[in-house]
Length: 216
Image (cartoon, rainbow, N blue to C red; front, side):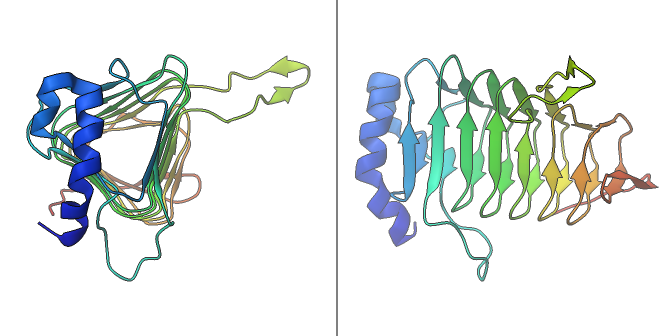
């Protein structure tokens, strides 16, 4: 275990006891000392398959990538986060939940400086890999009015199992990505991609290749 993780143990233990009571002694969530927490409570942080250090927040990532000073986990209103297994969230990453549910599946890894903003519903499947500076959000943040008609500012995001999203990608509201797919570096996704095993890329994103496979 790294020095950074050892130093994070005392604070992480206190946080886990607060969230999970006596079960928190197992420390299922290891949180770096450079992670800011706001609004977390027993009812809005849920670990579905608790195990020691199965969730790690604010640690590591590719060397040479400049990260923000702090990671952030902020939950407001009726928002909640569900961890479905082993989850690693890289240094400098932020999770901001204004409402709705943010679900992260098993064997999830995101690199440094990723940003997640949930106001409706974000679901990330199992075995998903994110590069650095990936942004996933299910809301426009503000309401757009076109010809006097208000557009719906929120729509759920669904990332399928075994998806690799490369660095500097933006995933916007209403997006779905089929399982076993890859999203190319620097892309911006704005719609639903139902097909599986696709390479998606561009601004806005489109299917570039089909019948692809990928591995770590």
